[in-house]
Length: 212
Image 1 (cartoon, rainbow, N blue to C red):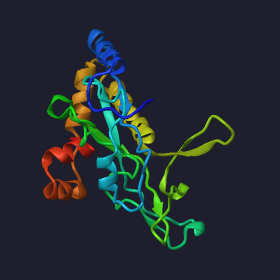
Image 2 (image 1 turned 90 degrees about the vertical axis):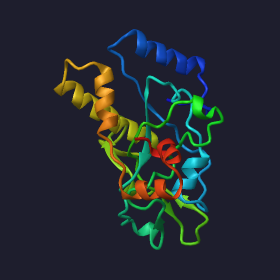
Image 3 (image 1 turned 45 degrees about the vertical axis):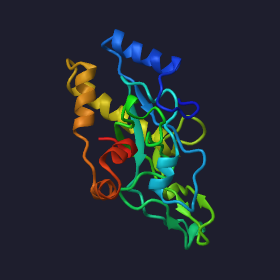
């Protein structure tokens, strides 16, 4: 759960998370970066991410902040004939947020640490509208009416990251949370789209867009 965009400065909320993680070695927080509330179909996914600031309390130093990228591209729904996908394969998801424009600058942590699959959007033929067809989202279980539903954006990415951490915890039950955190982040790799983006911007902008 996240609230309003932050400038990277600590808040009472993020400070409490930092304290909980520091004081009890059994605690590890995985927090979504938060979603862009003002997605523009006239901008590409990278610019959308850079303009959207990560939300409170995801600036917590001791938490793992998760952004979203996507490899979903297959749009079969006839309702969206002639629509095109918003993000190319391997780019950040349209709704993800970054810490590129945090005014606290170098004093703030690099967030997100990593990105996971968050689904994709589609842009209308005229280029003025966007939508999120189920074809481009993540399938998951539902506890409401149907057995299955779809999930998207940084919430879906955070759920996948939590699953990854849980599987590591099961396999390496004696490892400290700091070790599990290190395994998650240090095992991450930039794909070709991310490397190309870093080449045309800077390593720091890339880090603050999709992490390590």
